[in-house]
Image: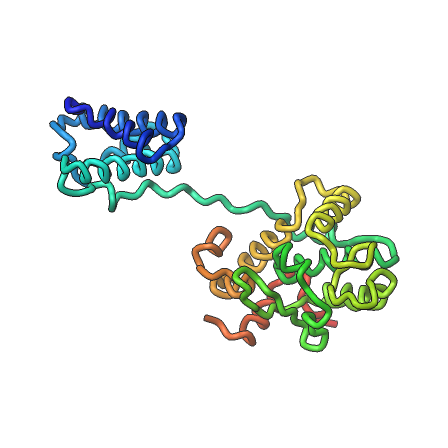
Length: 299
C-alpha cells in the first residue's frame, strides 16, 4: 500500500516543515498506518485509489472494533492532513477524507437534582445578611437557570420585582429577560433589606461578599458546597447543577424545547437538546405552569 514511502515522507513534512512535536508526529504515524493496514486488507492498491466510501467503511470498521467517536475523528483528521499533503505532492488528485465525518458520540444528560432534593437544598435555615444572601443566590440560580457568571454579574437594577423578571447578560454580551419565581422573589426581597449591612456605599452589585464588594464566582461555589453539606445532599453540588436541574424540570413538565432554549439563552437549539420562537408572554406562562418553585398558591 505504501511502497513509495509516503507515510515516512509525510511524517518528515510534519517534523521539519510544520515543526510538530515528536509526540504529535507519533500519533499521526499511528493513525495513517492504521488506515494503510485497513486498505491492505480491503485490497486497495494505492493511495490514489482511496475514495470517500472507503474512508466511511474504515470509520465504520473502527467503530465496530470499539473505538470511541473521538478516536475515530482523530484518525479521520490525520487522514485529511495526509491526503492534503499527497495532493500537494501531486500523488493524488483529490482529498477523499474531506466529506467524511466520524460517528457522533452519544450525548449524556448533565447531572441534576430531582425536585425533592432541590427543595431540601433550598430550605436554608437561619437569619442574617450572609444567610439571606446565600438563600437569594441559590433560589435565583434554580428559579431562573442562570449561569454562574450571569449571577455574579447582576446589578441592583437588573431585577424587576414588580414584573418578577431578571435581565441577564449572557455569553456574547447578549441580554435576555428571564422570569423569577415566587420563592426567589421572596428571598430577594429579604436580601434587599439586609444587603446594606454588607455592601459598600457605592457598590452596584446585587450580590456582595462580606468585604462589601461584588461576590466572586469562587465564593459562590464555596457557599453552594457549604449548604449542600449542611442540608445533607448526597451529590456533587456546584452552581451549574442548578441550571441543569432548572432545564430538566421545566422540560420534563412542558416538553417545550424552544421555550427552554429561550429561557437558557442558548444560541443553538442543539445545545438545549442535551436535556432538551416563542414570545416572552408565552415563555412566562410556561414558566408559571411548570417550574416547581414558580407555581402560584391556589388558596
